[in-house]
Image (tube, rainbow, N blue to C red; front, top):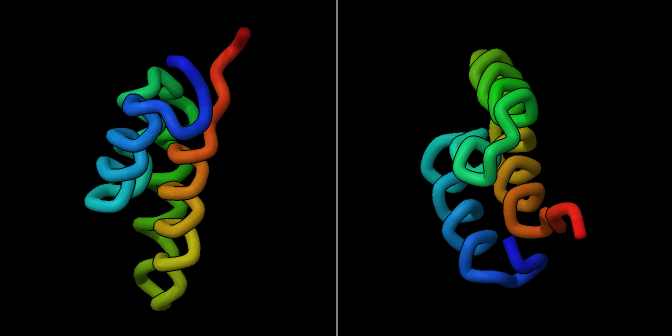
Length: 67
């Protein structure tokens, strides 16, 4: 991926908007995707999942790949 603000990151952020961790999965970061998905799922049970959901969106949008 080209870097922050690239089309790939925008698509990843949109994917994470719908399902936490999906954007990280699109970027090929399997462990981070699983972490975001599981944390969001667990915390939605106590109404704090929106915090992880927002973190997931921002993480996907601001991701800078290896140079």
